[in-house]
Length: 421
Image 1: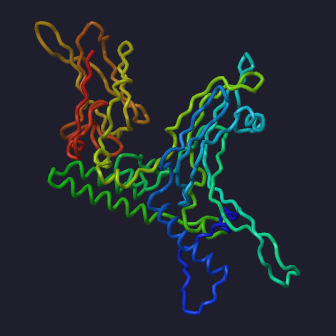
Image 2 (image 1 turned 120 degrees about the horizontal axis):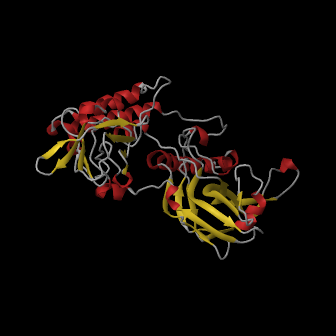
């Protein structure tokens, strides 16, 4: 990064103080530029983050054997704009010929000699010197003129990187935990870290509050989580340049645009015959206007775990119920399960069954004492009342997927899940 910093430096905390009769030199103009540049990048990097702003769609043209990136705009973790003005193309067979021995690529060779591999596309900031013009030099150097570059162009590099796309770093962990978007971090003993435990305790207290107090308490919970996140930030890195000292050590330089799954080349490695593009692995930035017009309304309500209804299976006497998030295992007790069957002439009666949770808390298993085939069986898992099943965010079970809480009070109240055969 040092070369780019030297070309387009950031000095957000040092400005030129002009005065009448001041003799201006190159350093003064560079300081003036770097001050404003630094202020803008600080704002973009810290208050907006990183990701795609618009466009930059990645596609695969099999007939041409090319990966194509459409025009667009993104921001990297240092607040720098990454812009592509015209369609960019990369020849896959040519790239493979150059990178086939890369250890990270690990291509698979089929029986017919075809070659299959997975790569991802990243975009990276690049600053280039341009427009050389005659320039005066110091006469002490023994010359009278030389050629110097008079422009700096901000452009980008588009790179294919072997292997699947990495997870991009999520900031504000505690705030995300309070929203039910992150799991709690734990120590070597499996206990939540102190700050995480504080958020979990606040969520548990929130679930028991009356509706008229819940909204204010939730606002306070999110505010305290955001404060703890801000206090935990560490800025700077081992790199010896100012720009690296303005942002976190984990600020991403490379922004993932897409993952190319199962790219297939023929045996001669000169023709692309297959592959799928996943553009949804990228981080993205949402405009403030969209957030102000209601983009956060749905996100403000987070429910507890839900049964993934599409994944429910019955095999013999075993009913498996996958969940959308992990449970608190201590809340999976016999009392949260009701298993009954309908008997003609007498109505509903108990149908013996036991309930267990997977070690990771991501599924429940109901084991019936007898084969339910031929019976009208009804299973109910408790997400309401005083002793419901809780998720690792301390919110109660909220039915099956497709059930959406209308507000925080709904989420805190929970919802039972019912399965019938």
